[in-house]
Structures are given as C-alpha cells and as structure tokens.
Length: 297
Image 1 (cartoon, rainbow, N blue to C red):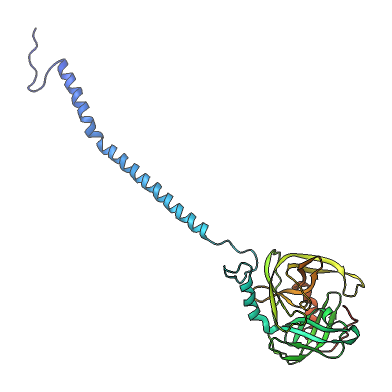
Image 2: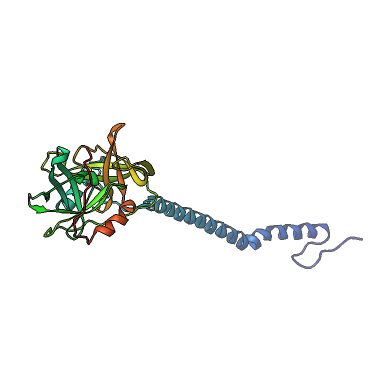
C-alpha cells in the first residue's frame, strides 16, 4: 500500500523527523543569546572593578609611604639642609639665648689664679655655674654679659660633690633659661655656648649627646667618690667653657658642661638637668653668701 501525502506543507515519515531536529537546532542560538550577553557584561564589569581597586590601592600606598616617620624623641628646631653639621641651628640658638649666658670673673689671691668661667641665668637674678669656677674666691666676683654690662655677684650655694654653684646677682635683668629633661635619647643634636678663658666674646659649638651615664668619680676635692648623672658629649671643652649650658636646638637646657674628656680633645661631660635639679631648686632664692672652700686648680 502506498502512503499518500500528509497535511499540506508537512512531509511525512522519516523526512519529517529530520526536519524537526534541524528546526530545533537552528532555533537554539537565538534562544541562548540574552544569557551569553549577560555573562559578557558581568565579566566586563568585574574586570573594571578589579582595575579600580588596584588603582585605589596604589594611591593609598603612595600616600602612606610619603608620610614622615612619627617622632620618637624631643622635637628639634630643624637645621637647614645646607648645614648638616648643625652650624646654622647653632647660630640661631646663640641669637636666642646669648643674653642669658654670662662671663664670670673675679680673683682668688691664695689660689694664684684669676677667676674665669661661664654661667647661665636659670632663675630671676640667679646664675648657675661650676663650683670649680668659683672655688677659693675671696672678695669681688662679677658677671659680665655679652653687652659688656657688669654686675656684682655673690656665691650663695656651693656644692663640691656635684661641682656646681649658684650666684645671686642683684639687678641682673636677663631671662631665665628653662631646663628640659629628655628620656632615653641618643645621638641628639645640641649646642654648647660659653666664654673661652681670656675671651670676651661668647662662642658656640654644635655638639652631639652620645650617651647618658651614671658616672662614678672623685668629688671636687678628691675627698670621696660620688655618682652623678652625666651626658657624654662630642664637643671640645676648652678652659673657661665649664659652667656653660648644654642647649637643645630650641634654647632649653639639657644640662651644664663641667669637664673635658681627658682622653679625647673633642669630647666632654655635662651634668644632666636631673642632676642639677635639687641644688638649683635650693639655690634659686638664696641671697646670703657662703664659703667657697679652698682652691681647686
């Protein structure tokens, strides 16, 4: 029996199955296109986001690395970049404090030597210096400022154990320098300002604080041993300079220079502000004269 044609426009038998499969295959690309477009769009957005995050991270890293390091010690008055040795900072400090640093002169006939040293104003009409500078002094003792003005002075505290003395100087109109007690610094820039023996001009030299020590040694007369808090400094300490302040670069006082380093011509020692504090506080209002002991060469 022969098969007749099926409904119009539709083949029959095996030919119909193949045509149906082809139509289904041809229709699949059109049906999946929105999904593929969405996938491509999401991929593009993801790449853009990654690029934005990377750019933002780079900016933040540059900003963080550009920040200056956080200070760990006392803020310092910065020296210009053209003076790495601190010479410019030294001149600025000297300009600020010179009126408060004085030359100490007098006589000690039994000692067969003139009195010549440095001191600095630390309280109204009161000057701090070393005991060695005024040991054995008899009679007149004067302070002379950078302007040449002379004032009569009296020793009102004499401490040979610490090697310091306080002078009462009535009529002295010079600002007091402030003490500063740093904690745990090292290799700090400082300034030593004083009058070299037989000199009339105030001189200043930059210095470095190398270490803070608890140093043991004899007292001024060699009668006993004492322990003192001192700074070891890199700075020359010629005759006349002991009694000079050891200054921070903002003009505050770290301590008082009292001795040269006998083993190093470019080294010296300074009593710390902490070591000076007790005697300085006791002497800041004293006006009655005290004995200055016997001569110390």
